[in-house]
Image (tube, rainbow, N blue to C red; front, side, top):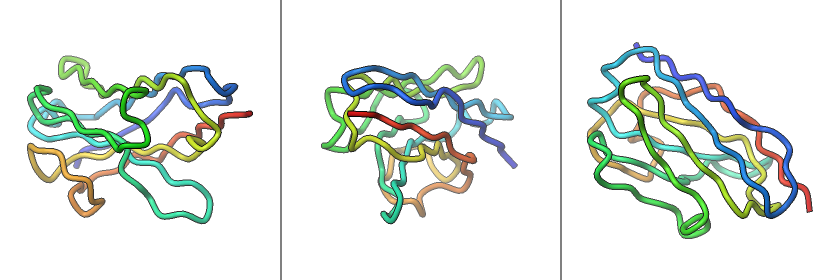
Length: 124
């Protein structure tokens, strides 16, 4: 069973940047697509970004396109989410996920393994 551990969250002012990391316990994660999701209080968990097993294709929610970048380093093995030009509406708990297929899907059912989440708070 793959274990995922997120880090890099914190408090930042609007317009600032953060880089989230998600470390996997097994190198077999290189066989799967990776996704980042977020959940704000009182809201459903939503897709943020995803990357295919090979790293050759990425997908982003419209709300973060042009500001966030997902990448992966299978040698570590870790997936990253670089978040720039942060807005207060980006405030949420961010989760990474993996484990059902090689290609990015936007639904939570497309992922078998989840991290515990890391809090991102953007102040105005």
